[in-house]
Length: 192
Image 1 (tube, rainbow, N blue to C red):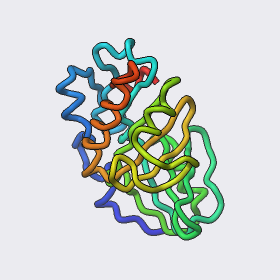
Image 2 (image 1 turned 180 degrees about the horizontal axis):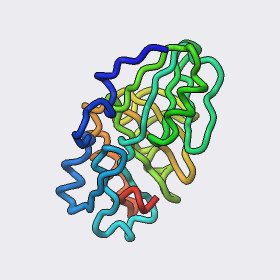
Image 3 (image 1 turned 45 degrees about the vertical axis):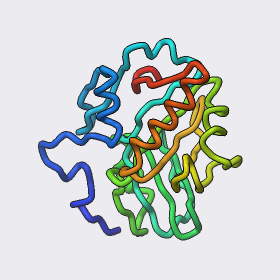
Image 4 (image 1 turned 120 degrees about the horizontal axis):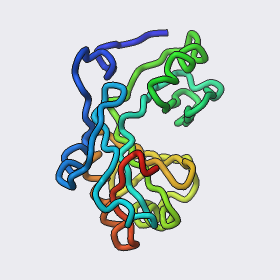
């Protein structure tokens, strides 16, 4: 197993990581907490009105790239996404990392947590919001989302959209715009 620790969020001793979506959430007056070394929007004013389609920032999830993909990694709160037979992403909370690393074994793994933004789209109108953002129909899948490359994974009650962190704010704004037409909008992670 190889690890490039300088790419890991956990390697930034004493620093608090923020996602690419931090600024729009601050502008909305979100309430933040530090959790696992990340500044996380836990609630957003008016989020109770967005039950139809809530849009939340989950960029704080640990993301490990595993090569070769091999069999799926399993565990509480762990999501396995095989991009190809040669490459997979494992997403989960920081507490799940030791168990995940044990299952990876001697395969190459790289912490790519800071490389991806993760946007949750949840609620009864989540499928409609997603259809207004992409032509992808089968999940998990990769392809064009809001005119940029990304991945869509199914999650309980909706979807996770993964994109390059540099494009996170843009994809967030598109998701919020599509959700607002359906009575949805931004929510904090505690509303999930």
